Amino acid sequence: MAGLEAIKYERGTLDVLDQLRLPHETHFDRVSTCEEAFDCIKAMRVRGAPAIAIVAALALAVELEKQTDGCTKKEDLVKYINHKLDYLMGSRPTAVDLSNAIKLLKQVTAVAAAAKTTGSDDEATACKIVRDAFITAAEKILEDDLTTNLAIGRYGAEYLRRQQMPVTVSQDEDAELKLFTTSPPGTQGAADKTYRKLSVLTHCNTGSLATSGHGTALGIIRSLHKMNYLDHAYCTETRPYNQGSRLTAYELVYEKIPATLITDSMAGALFQRLKQEKNISAVIVGADRVARNGDTANKIGTYSLAVLAKHHGIKFVVAAPTTSIDLETESGEFIKIEDRAKTELTQITGAVVDKDGHVDVSKSTRVAIASQEIDVWNPSFDVTPHSLIDAIITEKGEVVRSASGTFNFKNIMPQRWRAQVEG
Ligand code: MRU
Picture 1 (cartoon, rainbow, N blue to C red):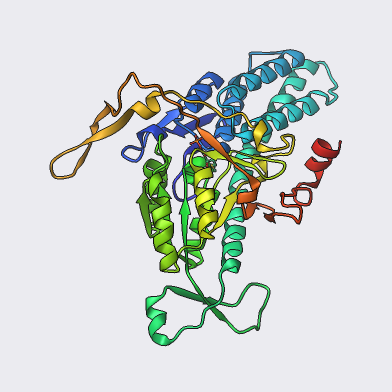
Picture 2 (picture 1 turned 135 degrees about the horizontal axis):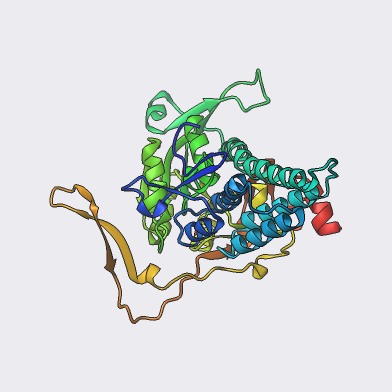
């Protein structure tokens, strides 16, 4: 795949981009064991709900690929796999993609272990079947994620375009207002209509760096840009970890998408200004866990943006693969929110900038930016109530609030719904 990549994988080898060094340095770490994957996830060298799940799954796949002489008994191998998966589960608690991937991999392992083997070398063959099934399933998580994100991008861009009202403009205005003209898909032969291009705000990083590629919320922005529907993207800095300024801004610049960085506290002022100019269309964010009623845990600050969007009458859209939907959790109050270290607020890492404005990467340094004695509260995520969300865009299409006011995922996930809600 062309473009930015956070995860490079070939059977037996996994390299993960160290996102703590971005935007100044591109450095991949070799991840060969589950312990290395655990550290990489915990230290947030890789982060973002889908990427965390992919790295965990592939790290164990790499271990199993190399393990030709380790476990020689099927029973031991299954125990080993389950033990490693449980260990990886402890790396970060809020994103549900990891636990969904682990559930799937345990299931695949159990099914493969139940397969009958014949012949003299039964145990060795059975171990090979289990290993192969695990590796194939882990690789499929990586492959499926990209297909999923491309679909989310398409559905999201079309959903947002449909929210735009057609405008009638004179030739002069045409040049001033940024417009696009199209006939809506499925209406071939109908007269083309003219719409304002969209300006959107996003929070945190949900792009290629948080996934196997393209991204979810940022994937929709990429798709809007590609389809020529996008006027401008705004990204928040996303304190305290600065995923917005370090990663999203980097991705937007890399892709040459017209974009502006703001601090988190500027969103309200931005909405006021853009509303005046009739030039804000939506806030688009990702998700770490979407509860059964649509309540969504995402990066801290998401909830504040949703409240602000509601106040200004701006659409608030969540982009989430179905792997981020947790049908077993009834509502947001049951979602465990990860607390992180106080140093994320009281210190910051930066590269030294010389008097001409050149960044010297070799002089990367950690700086104190607050009293080191102050007490700190640092929840990594917050929960946005479903009542503030207009649509959840998945790879199966958009889900909007039902008449009862909640989101219903039954139609897009019928099997999981039967197994996890009705069963
Ligand atoms: O703490 P992070 O950087 O892992 O948090 C990431 C987010 O909150 C993202 O919005 C979410 O995981 C979706 S990524 C496609």
